[in-house]
Length: 367
Ligand code: ATP
Image (cartoon, rainbow, N blue to C red; front, side, top):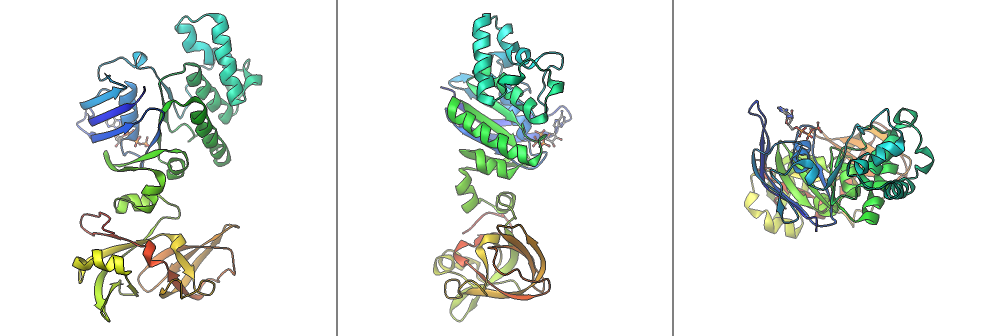
């Protein structure tokens, strides 16, 4: 069993900075949990405390049933993979991968068997004699992974392991780590600032900002039901469109009015949000929930408004259109049909059932 339990974890650095604030989460046995958040949110500090590389100010960390607060790193049965690989430059790939096993005084044949197994899994069998300086960034990262795999730890901890790789290699390595998890079945905690990595790799995501956890859930639940404005804006690319307005009564119905346009709420939204009538509210709508009325039937999506095309970004399989109304800018993601021109007036329909509403003060998702 390698469940990780983190209870009320706090970190005050020596200068008094409160970097991690009452963080609580679990990574179940065999689960792949991703800690994601912007730079400085405290995710690396949490990981380093789990690894035993950073002292805990208060709180508890359990690996399985064991409280590990005071346990030295090497007794925790974890392997950590870093962004900068941290390979020994004077050792061959084989020696780098074998190093921890030699320290454990395992016999030679066993070490060779384990290194060969990991090298085969990672496709680096032909490079075992090379030094790290003779490898590409992606190959070095594979060696760093291999060095962790041979130890067969209870838990893998990853600290932004793909950040030094180019975009294409990152995508390939992402898939390899997911496959690795599937094959090995170890518990994994992975830190990244990249929401795409979090969405594509995680069983569950922990979203952090300013040392605080804002939401813990599966990727799709977080995408579809973001807990607050920060999570809604952080997860998803292009980012969700946020518009400040108020709820007003019109023709017996409730509408969202931001000064530029009015959009009728669905009956479900109207019921839940009735208390916000005549009050400020923030509406969020994702780019894929906006449609070009020239191609998508108004009957299906009756809410609409007019906007001018500011910029068109064709991506081949889709295009992003930055649109403006009098006081608002927002992004739409359209299928590749007829590309609009800059300056063109478009009628935009939207799937109101997909809209989110946030309280402007608490910033919490209220629908
Ligand atoms: P990044 O993605 O940039 O690595 P992060 O989310 O991993 O960021 P941490 O490295 O955990 O963030 O740092 C959290 C906060 O703690 C940051 O504001 C950082 O400046 C601060 N911090 C980190 N190490 C120290 C230290 N030794 N002394 C004081 N403050 C520190």
